[in-house]
Image (cartoon, rainbow, N blue to C red; front, side):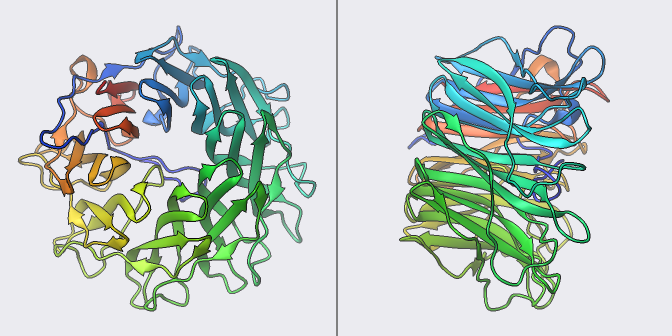
Length: 482
């Protein structure tokens, strides 16, 4: 399983399927379908198919990578048009890319059908890691271009990457990530923000950090969400001059990125809280919710929620875990779409925790009319003992209040990872249903599962993910309820 909070992006190990929320009955899902890869492809490296965005019902874009006939990684884009998945597209590398560019897609977003953007990283001819953007216009992908980094970017040993992108309208997007900036004695990892305005991507800007940061603040910007063009919020973490890790907010208003703010933690937080924000969702400009984790004074890892109201971020609140949780629940979020909001004050989030027996379990927690409730343990299919170290909730989507879908992974009775989909119907999370994998496959494996899950309307959903075809090969799958 891969996760975004570390060096790059966060992936998940087992989480699949997609779930619509419909009053009355849970939807029936057909078996998932294998993703068509370019000719000669050998599979999806490490099962990593992280990106999914949908402009409308049945019109989506997915992104990731595949291994070509020579064994090298290529960037992959998949387009769903009117419910049908089209032939795969190999990303054309930027003009300064190395012969083996090693393109990795980390995220994508769509402002309208046929107008999407994909972001990630690649190697240039000097073997530097550089950030790229590939834009789609009128249903045609233009090819990747290198991000123009801030003036203080180092030339040698650059490690630039874009982790997340949001596009509230066609030609208007915001992307966030990190890059290596000049500092003494060594380069510093700084936050990077870059905007597309009226179809033109601008030069990237360095994130202005709160006072008292480390010489190398090791900034991570994990995710960005936009309520409208030029009005966005990004979340992540940074390190202060004492070596303590803090949660970080960066807000954009009227296309101007403001100085970053440090997360105000719950009263029981440690002085060295190891705090980070992993996911954010915005309903309107200045009204967002975010989730993350921190260490309390006992050193226990707790989950947190935090609300932005009228452009002001409030003090974070500790999540209340299920009664089965261990004294140290070790709450963990995968960093994909871990939170979704249908309206202001009505959201759902999910992740993983440890129970009092030491097992790993998934959890789901709801914000109802502005109040976060006690978390629920993920209800697994019969005979499933736990979600496992590589399991738990990875992706959520909430098309209306009280109606959501979540993708997760779990260990079955034989110890194999399976994908599961869970529906919240009229405010109640139901028991998860195992996803039927393509071609008789029996497991999603340690690195597979559902990475993307989006319902643009109740019972109108699309999901993407990966599964284990053999001991060493992963393939991608798609799942759709429409």
